[in-house]
Image (cartoon, rainbow, N blue to C red):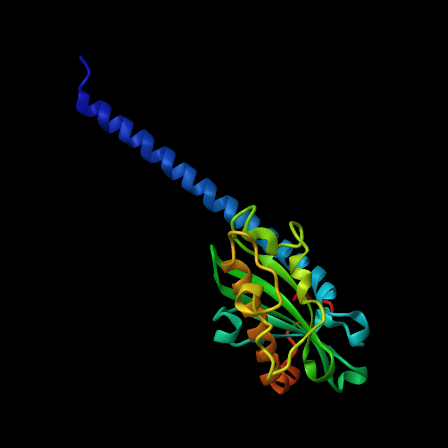
Length: 220
């Protein structure tokens, strides 16, 4: 007659071994794919830089001229953010930026964005794209250009310090459409874009003079 205790021990060992093997496989899969995932994310980022900043607004290789940004609440309090910089001839004047930022108050968490700012005194938002989000499908995900063209509402919006009331959804007195049943998401994105252009206005000199961390020929 078999010993129930021995059977329990054997089953526990089998389950433990299975859990260990599964954990190892997960770790190995993560280690084997994290560089690929990061590289893919970088390729997507570089593709959208030219979507948010007009090519005629700079003369340098903007994809290979970037600087790391300090943690700042105007940029969502996130770390590991970068700004890509476009200059005039001979790199004498900062004329455009594509700056990463985070809307930290999305309905389902952080919304990663890149905001293009150009024009006189870097006062015009030339484009915005969502890099990553977890908003509800069918509702908040309309911030994604693949789902809706709502994000194009920011194209060529000029920032004026004395006139910020229009940087809001229409139900709050602004000019941007909300989403039916999902007002929190567009509010978060609008607020993040406004905060970002204000950050650019305040820190133009620092952005222009920061060391370049995206040297030509190297992956940013």
